[in-house]
Image (tube, one colour):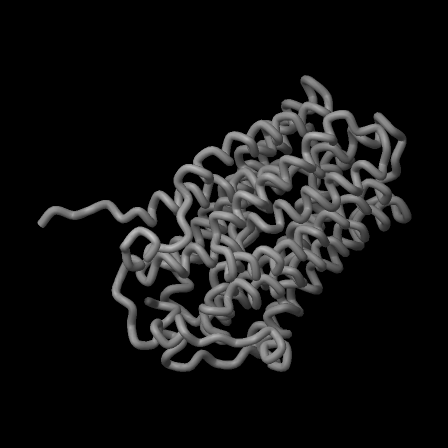
Length: 411
């Protein structure tokens, strides 16, 4: 029998491209911190404040985008987020004042990229796929790693060759380009094209499809706060700390900028491997134990970071840390959908993701502040290691999935 191509894979490709560029835009702070210090004399804490505001706005873009996806569909939301990101990037090319960094990077780019993030990707995966859903969620999560892998070395090279304004120029061009396939090819749901989601839905999946939990009811449950608390720590230990301050930390400790850029790209490659593997594992094993192991390994790698002074050690760190940078996303999405129902995933996971970025924003500013006060990042790295162990304990306290929920995760 002739097999027809499932249009959902085109939707996956378009969504992946949008998430990839959105993630690539988020790599800019680690590249421009040192150049902005040299150009304007701004302190590390002052620049980190703008980055923290952007991360907060990025976090609130999650529930905003999640609610809008539930109401208007992924296509309009994706277009709106990319346009807002572009509107924030364009004025930054001629930035001369700190308030411009706060307003355009902190607010516009923060909200725009926050809308086009894994909250949107999770909804797309759940609408289009009953089978291979974990792999698709993992693929979307890996877009963040791929963005780092592709954009970070490029941005470092652009900044070195042409100056920091060219970083924003390159990111604006990439954002404008990815808008084209989103406008032309993106679709909200398979039913709009007379299709059904890929794979047959089990009775448990059908139940989860229609089950809806209001945000008011969700916040009254212990599981919501356990998921939000662990994801707060996830943001603290990834985007906020490592995503913002690892590159300045390594340069200050004698690493060559070109060498460390490729080490970070290697971390991004391992991130892709780890996230795709996590998506596969989350379809098959208890997601609570997966999350606990991810946070535990992350804690150990962060505890070792202050003592790494040569490239071999940094590559080992990049390997271990990279494997679970966003590996936490597929099981967290699964647990949220299983616990609260897929019909309300956009809204509830959006707020759980918001807690992730609040943690990231706090770590971003605290990293810059403590570096100015103490002269290094050692204390903040150790604090992240301790919190990683706390996150492992939190996810182990989540309620055991019911039989129906397990079927949803494996559908």
